[in-house]
Amino acid sequence: MQALHNTVTRISIGALVVALATSAHADQVVKIGHFAPLTGMSAHVGKDDQNGARLAIEEINAKGLVIDGQKIQLALVGEDDAADPKTGTVVAQKLVDDGVVAVVGSDFSSTAIPASRIFSEAGITQISTGATNPVYTLQGFKTTFRVVGTDAQQGPALANYAVAALKVKSVAIVDDSTSYGQGLATEFEKRMKALGVKVVSHDATSDKAVDFRSVLTKIKGENPDVIMYGGEDAAGGPFAKQAMQLGIKAKILGGDGVCTETLPQLAGQAIDKVICSEAGMALSKMPGGVEFQQKYKKRFGQPIEMYAPYAYDSVYIIVDAMKRADSTATAKILAAMPATNYKGVIGETVFNPQGDLQHGVISMFYYNKGVKTLIDIVKL
Image 1 (cartoon, one colour):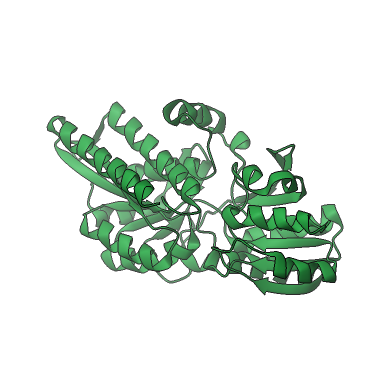
Image 2 (image 1 turned 45 degrees about the vertical axis):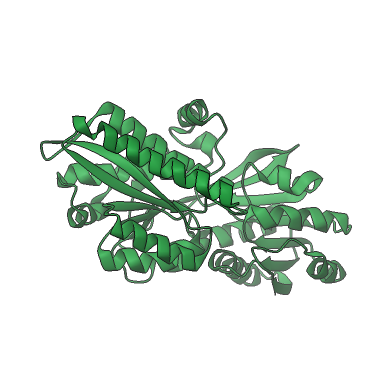
């Protein structure tokens, strides 16, 4: 893992060095921060997010950017939050000290929420690409924005689908004890109870767990129609696999944390039992999704995991605020953010007073022979 961390660090520093080397042709180098898990169990998701931001910055630099009469060269300053809340605050302060004018990240609620206070105190715009816990934008900070829906929308949508399409009468719930997993599971549970579904149990595990047989054996005895897992794919995949090994026939429901392209590798044959949601539009249905997917694959040699389109648009949204403010000053960028009306890959981005999307969607998926397949889109 240390070798991977060193490699990621070199890549991030390398990008900054390249930007500085080419700054001879620019009047000003402007740093945009990014933080996400780049090492550990969720590194594939974080790297995907960073790649989206990097692609946007490369495009903008290639086209040329002029703000207030000055030629601007953008530089991405990337940091690894390791999906750890304490590390999240450390890298947030580092980004502030590095002089970034705005930040994209994190895609995890567990790190985006504690880091948000640091950015708020510094007056720096923070756009999260995947922090779905409602708390993120409900803290009273004027600096927090997100380009995905919330668990207060995603949890009920997942519950509604389970009742309407699967005719669920009972459910067992397990969360990974993170702010994301707990938040999603809680919202799901509230809606299930409101719909008259029996919640037979709600257990907690860890986002670092690898053995779920104890809790799954208990759940097998409870015989629920479905099991809802609140957490990320790194643990959610083995959770589904071990449920199948124990002979549990119930389907596994999950949120955007498990709804990745890597999940089939993690869940094995149990992938056929997984139904999951995303707090955004399916890539295939995004206005610029198909074209973006082609560009991304050409640049990075791999398919999109999940959050890359949101990080890509987030960089363009920050630059749009710069253009409207005709300034690269952090305070002026932040002042321009509430009036955002940007049409990009993911669609139209307009923020409400809390910094959430005015018009969000929830997409539902299943895996057809290991291929992530859209079931339905719920407009909010």
